Every structure is written in C-alpha cells, then in structure tokens.
Length: 398
Image 1 (cartoon, rainbow, N blue to C red):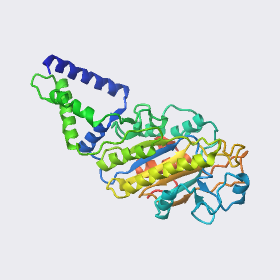
Image 2 (cartoon, one colour):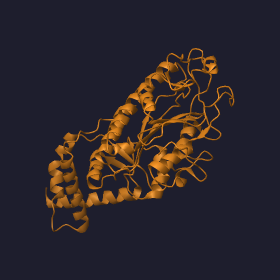
Image 3 (cartoon, helix red, strand yellow):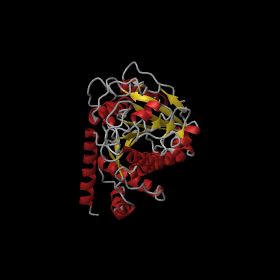
Image 4 (cartoon, rainbow, N blue to C red):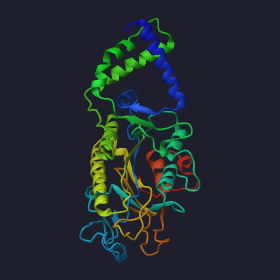
C-alpha cells in the first residue's frame, strides 16, 4: 500500500474514532467482542443479566394458567385450557403446555415467577406501556432508559451493555452513554478478504505521528485477536423474531468471557386480538425452546453460572375473551426470572379473576422491584439511579 494512502487512511480512522466517542456511537461487531474477551475478560463470578422483551402484550393468564379457578373457565369458555392440558405447578396454577422446558427449570428450583407485575395507573397503549417499562418512569415520560441510567452512573466502558440488533430499545439509552448495538453482518470471508490491508495498516512505521501509531496499533491488536479466535464459530445471522439465534450469540459471548454485564434480546408477535390460542402457543414454544437451551448452556459454564435471565411483556391481557377468540389489552402479567442464582418459586400475589378494575387484573407487584433485584444482586450496583428512590427488592436472587 503506498505510504500516502496508508497515512491518509490512518488519520481518517483516527478522526472517525474521535467522532464516534463524542457522539456516543454504539455499533460493535463480533470481532470487537472477541478482542474485548481476549484483552480484558469478564471477572470470574461477575453477575450477568439477560433481558428478554416479549413485544405485543403477552397473555399472562394463558401463560401461567389458573386452571382450578372456575372464573377462568367462565371468562374464557373456548380460550381456556382444561386442567388436563396444563403443566401443573401446584393445585391451582399450571404452565401453558408449550413451556415444558421452563417447567423443568421450575422443578429444579431455578425459575421464579413474579405474579401480577405492572405499574400504577396502567396504560393500554403498546407504546406508552412499553415506554414505561423501558424507562422505569410511570409518572411522566423521560428520555432515558433504566439500563441507560445504570450506564451513566457506572463508568464509560461501551461494552457493559449490548443489544442484539442494530436498533437500540429505549431502555438502553442514557443521558451520556448508550448500550452497544451488536451487528452480526460480518462474515469470515469478508474478514479474510481484507486481511492483507489490515496487515499493511498495522505494520509499525517510525515516521508515524502518535495518532497514526495508535491507530496502527489497533489494527495489529485486531489481527492478533482475530487469529486467537479464528477457530471460534461465528454467531448465526439474526432474523426476525429469531430468539434462538439471539440467545446463541449471547451464549457465545458469555462463554468466551466478553466483559458485558447486561444483554438485551426480544421476541415479537404477542398482540393476540384474534385466534389467540394457536398463535400464543407457537410463540411460547419459540420462547421456551430458546430460553431452555440457553439456560442449559449457561448452567454448565464458568461465566454462565452467574447469568440471570428476565423475560417480560409490556402488559397482560383482559380476563374475558373477546368475540374473535382473542384477548384485548390488559394490565398485569407474570415476569419470568431464571438462572443458577435464582431462588425459584412464586413472588407477588396471584391477582384475582373476579375482583377486577373495569375488567382488568389489579396489579400486585411493581415492575421496578424486579429491576431492583437485578441491579442490586446481579449487577452489584445502587438501583436508585435506574428505578428511583423508595423501591425494594422482592428476594428472588441469592
């Protein structure tokens, strides 16, 4: 490569890097994560949170099913599950038949079900309700998320939180810092194609300015890391609603020692206003397959044993079925919390199916208290900047 081109490219790279730092640009690639794992791996025993958002408003009543309650069958004569169909938890409640893997996690004591979770004065809008869950601000709209405020309060490492996908959710945005967005478009062939160029750019040259030398050193570090992790299987491409692929990427990052403390993934499609039963069961099967495989990998890994997985949706559904054999936007629903550090069991009171608020369940647990436990016990930080003062945990984490 001619020297003038090398010089211009190194100086341009330095300028782009500086702009990225100022603007808070958050895009990262798989090689970025692997370099971080090689150079500064996560500490043994450090807690890791995986937050899964179920977009659309999952029907919690047909997820953790009150099969022994006559009011359930009366409210949903064709949509309800018979007692013989559910996976019994106790004499009153059972899991949807699609959740066989999570039922096994429950029996092993590694799954907590937090019941009746919502926020004060619930809103039936997808957008406003999801905004509240992701910003942890029920009283008024704010422009920072609960994860973003944790990032603001705890340092400047851009890899502390990683979203799987290019578009950051509101929870990931802070006033000063954002989470990283993982791009999974790079292929091994593209890395090989540019190997001669990166080798030339990384070659030391005594005539380099300090800025050029620093950029050149970064290319040498990249080549070293790429060589060290050459045998590691690249993460799968991420497709729409491919929760299995998202969690496979997260599992590969965790087992490689990437110094990320919080990951975000998602699954959509839960807005089941019509023909709910088959649609929801297929989605819950997708969810169960992905999460069960992920938890099994984590339970057998040095870093994975510190993982806590949280799955939530922006609201539950109304108690009574509608005329289209679906359910309309409701309020409270269950939150799943799973992993080796979890104290399995029920948390929060089961909402009544007859003592309703204009047809909606009355919430029994504030969602910010779920976040409190994750922040305090998994991330080891003061929860107040993220969830505000006066909150308390619910005891689901060791």
